[in-house]
Amino acid sequence: MRVAAIRTGMLALLVVLLAVSAPVVAQNAANLKKDMIGQWELSTAERGKTCVVALKPDTMPQGMKLELEPGCANALPFTKDIVAWGIKGLDIVRMQDASGQSVIDFTEVESGILEGRRSGEGIYLLQNLAAARALTRSMDQMIGNWAMVRGSGAVICTLTLTNTEAGGDNFAVFVKPHCDASVVALAPTLWRLERGEMLLMSARGETWHFEADDNAQWRRVPDSADPLFMMRQ
Image (cartoon, rainbow, N blue to C red; front, side):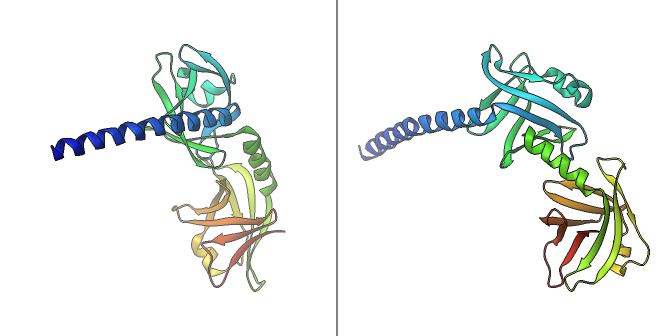
């Protein structure tokens, strides 16, 4: 009798929890849907290949309506299979084919940026179009001469960030003579902007990360007792 009563009580509690959670799930999905309506940039992780996607609230047999700009299929071939989008569960934004199957699923990794993975291809990003274009403008502003400066104010190297494509969504860096031994050891040949960081990379894959203090000054991270900055010349 006691075991039966416990089981009955647990079942009743489960029913209550399901009843409470269902409206929460529906509300969260509705909020996510509202937030996603608008124009987004779909891109490779480094934004070397991009296309614009307009997510709409209109319903259709496969889900909700979307529009892909004409160049999407050339830039990102998998997009030719996408015919609709929808919200799955609490936080998944799904782009799906005509049969309702997932082409790619996205989840938010930071405000306004969602990340999805396709097996055998890698990571793709979905981010607010206005924010993505602001990032592009920021990248254009990076082109030119920079000084690498210690916290003491001593200049240890000067280098030029270019817009010369160097493969893998990277761009060429030219280091000028007479740099500090630490920079010579790194021997940076590539750079790019990635998720708010400036990356300086060597041909062997070693990478220094810098975060912006402002538009003209970037600080190496993780921080150290002897900080290092990239400063616009």
